[in-house]
Length: 353
Image (cartoon, rainbow, N blue to C red; front, side, top):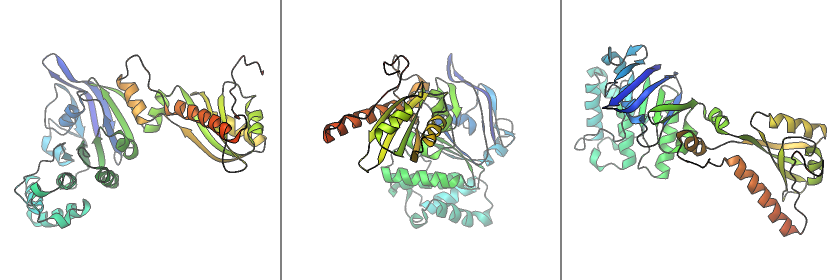
């Protein structure tokens, strides 16, 4: 759907975008992340044809943005960070005007305006002046403008900036709904929104793309180890006896309030299939697994690690925090019950071996 090839944008001797390439597939939501000044807004403005690149090219559905600008731009709906509204127009007047600019046939404009208002839930605001709208509704009207003409690609630059928590949730659900009929590129500083909304993430730093993959694969990329959390039906000592022979794994065993259930947090090298090893060992011991989850690095951890925003200090993955929390909880539980904490770690050279 979109091909970006060796894109460069220079201002004097400074690179805003420095030789970036990526492909956007149809029907997915792509998240474009980067710290302030990283070049993501510049890249998005080049993709939409608002500014020209120094070198490289952008193809939208096979059309070069510079050589075939009209054909390429017909495929794009763009919502900039500040919605381009005319404040003295009503919502309906503004969208009718925008439809005319986008060359929507005159006999189809009324139906098209009605369609996008319904899709963004602003129909009841049709007679309201744009200047009297809340921030959330201004964003919705701006998004309605981007949807006029039913473009194949929707590009959203910080669509949730300035919104309250409820409006952010509504905007996230709206974006996910758009993915059923459009390819969506989303630039956002709200990492939780990107994590919950996007199928694929591109991270840009200092004008270069430093990583691009699914959220799950990016999590594995930055993780130093894999951590798995299980709930099993057994007593703590039996679980410890089963896990003790497993080399290169560390673990914490925590009795739960529910009788007969134990929570186990296990950590191993990221290249080790921890889930398979542990599940096999527990199955052979006839210990039932009630729940099993892999604890991954958060998008915040990934973002900070790959953009180099933690000089001299590596972000702590949630996996490590989870294990520490499990061990602390075990000690706390032991103090409350008066019994010794059922935690154990296996390491090479332990005296128990």
